[in-house]
Image (cartoon, rainbow, N blue to C red; front, side, top):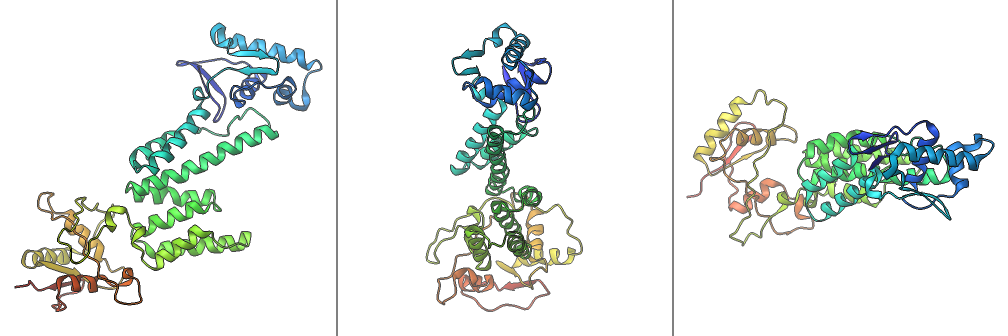
Length: 373
């Protein structure tokens, strides 16, 4: 037997849905399932089943509803509804309800994410969220016990929504995470974890300006609505963004070695081409291909947003897999100033790494380092 309480109540034996009858048996089963196998006293059950509008002889009416529910479940499953000295209880393992399964999957997703098994974490969180069909124990009216039980599941649901996107970001599925988080921050604007993940996803997507704009938006929202400042997580994230902290990048993209090392780690994953079309760069792509056939290093330069990264991605994505050279991150320069190494420009790092500062003039976006003799 499997019972569904994350939404309208449903009880199944195999693939067969049970006809539970009218509202009273359904409320009785929902109340017993909410207790997770613990006995529920008669007075509490009467309150949950009828509220203030109960029948005249409530204990007798409760016994009638219990009998009807047992009959609807059949002889075998009917024995799960037991009478104890403390009240009635439904002896069903919590794993045989969608609420119990949901809780297990959320916990499993967190463990897998912590162990670095990002794809499996995404699968666990996704399966958990698919179980959520609506308000838990929808048949029951508000009461202290019902409100507490619902609040616990709503919090787990919110955590699952957030950590699913954290797992997607960790797995490299940045676009889907950003799309989901854009709606998630609207649904629960005061949950700062969602804003942290959205800002991180935007930054990893190359949208630094929009990431900073979202940080300003949540800061203003919290100040205007609640009169508080962002929490430590958002403040630290803002500092990292302004410092271009490499810790914000995916783990594979931040690996580097000292200048003296001869073994440079190689990232074999090919960059994915964006879904939008690249229009009007045919001449630059042709020039870039030509220069790379003649020179060992070509650097794209220009103001922010002019399209340097997109040009490089388009060029490499068009190459056959066998001919595309692996991406090798340039070594970092030692910190010789008061500024952090992450503030040094890429052209400065590449120049030092190649021991060359002589840049040959080239058309816009393209400059090349001469081949060393």
